[in-house]
Image 1 (cartoon, rainbow, N blue to C red):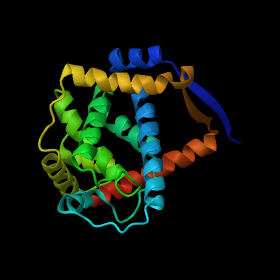
Image 2: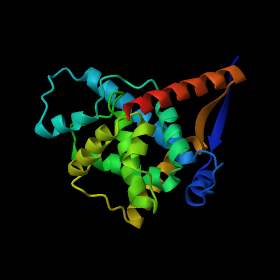
Image 3: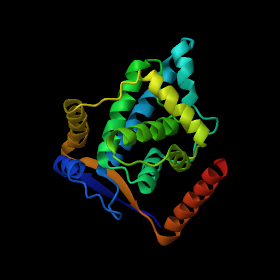
Length: 227
C-alpha cells in the first residue's frame, strides 16, 4: 500500500537550506535537488511537445552533431529525481554545486541552440555538469572514475563527455557572485509560485523500500562492471 503526502517548500526554507546547509554525513538531500529535478522535467516535457509539433525535417549542424555524444543508446531506468539523489548520496556535493550545474546547463543550451534536453541525454548531461561544477566549487573532489561509477558510465566515457562539454561551453566556467545569486533567485521564484513549492512525496512500505535498495544495488553492480 502506498500513500502520498505533499511536501511544501517555502521560499524562506529553500534559501535557508541553500545558504546554511549542514554539511554532515547524515544530512538530508538539499532542497535544490528537488527543485532542479522538477525544472528539468518540465523542460523535457516542453521539448517533447515542441518536437511533436515540429513537422519540418531536422538537419544536424556540425555543433549539433557534437552534442550527440550525450545521447545514450539505452535510456537509464531512473527518474531525474532518483538520479540526482543518487549523485548526492555518493558524492555529498553541497547545494551550491547544483546551482552552478544549473548555470552550466543553461549556458550549454544557449551556446548550442539546437540542443534539446530529453530522456536520452539528460542523465549524461547531469553527471557531467555536476562533476565539472563540483571541481569549480569544492576544494576537494572525487576522481572522474568515481563520478563515472556513480553515473553508470565508464571512466573513458565520462572523460570524453567532460572534454566535449568544455569545448562546447567555450571553457566559460566562471560563475561570479552576482550570476550565482541571480540563479538562486530564479530557483527561489520557482518555489514562490503558488505560495510554496509542492513536491509529491510517497510514503513507501518496507517492501517497496527494499525493492528500491535492490534496484540501486543492481545499478551499482552494473556500474562496477563498466570500470
